[in-house]
Image (cartoon, rainbow, N blue to C red):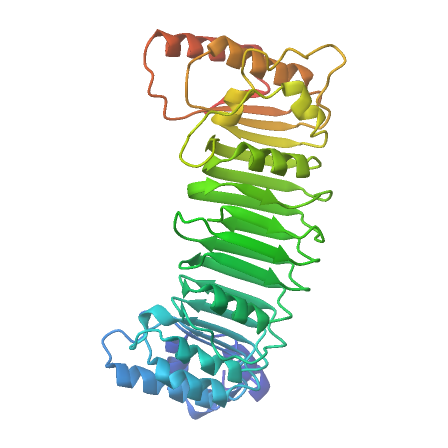
Length: 414
């Protein structure tokens, strides 16, 4: 290393960002220590100061941040005193581009006012916050350069979320994950392309989105969903693990490639609305257990197989779980089949079967998928959590295994 030119030494050492490694290198020689001002990134792992008093850990962070004159990225996962954050950010406000903070392990409670210091870093492009409190709106001003915002595990309020979004008008990616305390979320961003919203609790939370460039949308925990028709959605995922989904209004989805709808209970109007909007979808995943309104759990109504696939001509991959498969296996689900019918694009099907009841109707539906799907390459039958262990189950497995044997190149059992 002594023979290597100064600029090359600085370049090699600049590839490190772990605070412990950097501190070790600074002890090797004065030449190596003099390279610290050229570090673009500092990363303080969660246990980097284990065994040290908090005041010493804070002093070490302060020293390294003040020494790294060209700091562009600062990631702090270890415990620190949030009251010092303002001084660290003011030191590197001109150069800092990416900031990631874990606030749930700070010495003080993560009060909303602690986040105000972030507003001084006007050149931030990427901001990720863990365990923060957004019960009051932070005073950020306007972060014009911020493109990516991710907030995880936050206690939030409606007005605070609205003000945070308004403070970041140029966002391209937004993620609010594991957040709790909101009843209504409204987001209007002209540049937003990817949005992930994951809200906890079984309460009836609503969301309104208006983003003309939106291409990827993932929603979890909302009962009422409205997306302005001006969008460019390619991927849409809607889930609710507790409570019900009552209404989904997403407008036309002509460019949709992937659609996932999951949950314990959806109203049938919400399911029908999404399926109608996503008639051009290529990959569809349906994992909804029940339909019905309010607390009344009901099975899916009968679905005509011919009508369904005629309304989803471009479908290439179809994952059917539980209730949806049962709806396609009703007494009259296949009544409109004839020689003119075909499923033109379907290549892969995954069917989740939990009950052995009505084995012949299930088998007829599976045989129809194989027979009328002219490009089918793979049909996976996944058996899961069957509680019924009498002769009906034996007959079901007997018929399924026979079906697999006759179509061994296509049919697989898991």
